Length: 298
Image 1: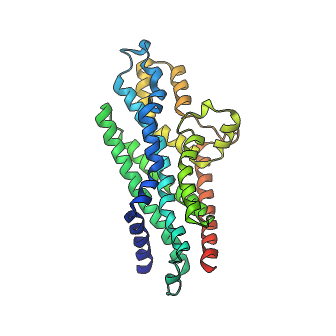
Image 2: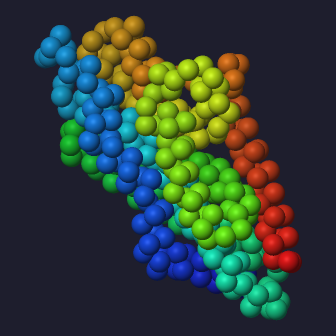
């Protein structure tokens, strides 16, 4: 057990000491935050600032809606980019043959492989929870509204689940790569690609049916929808009390990307989608373990 914990600690420290790796792990989140603050965030709520809503909808409530919608997507992106970033240790260790020193020791091979996975889980959870805590405080200061305790707990639980799914997919993708250059390319485009195709940069409702069908096959899309439903539950309820229009709330839910989209046009409940994501994550984790074992032997 000591050697396993030592390996986990080694991977985490190696990642955290590399400031460039840490920066690029947050790059997708930084880009998305910048775009939201510049214009995307306001586009989602601009119609609520029209003259007919003046005196009906509080400006602070609009900020509450905007930030909740924004962070619902950013927190999902964070679980992807961070877990991928620390998985870069696998590529560098394989390319530099740093693993050779471990293979001549009594440490079991499965411990070496899963130490990378656990280190990614720990680092991703730490920074994602830290970002969620910052979101709670920021929303309270900027809008005057505070997330209910139940929403805070539910979001924490979902972030733990999402981290498991994201890290499992990332370790599988990384074991398919053969060089640091390929890893750099993947880490550079993956966050942005996921942001577009999963409806984080713009609502899925504006895309064609074919794009929505593709998006519906990606677990991150449903993760974003579920998290937005939790985080936007209270501000949408307050908004309904203010405008008393189910039609307007329904249109906003569609525009915010809160509506479940099923899979390729088929109606599938969110519970089954999350269970399916967990099963897929477990399968990819196993396949990643097999790929890694073959690379260590070669």
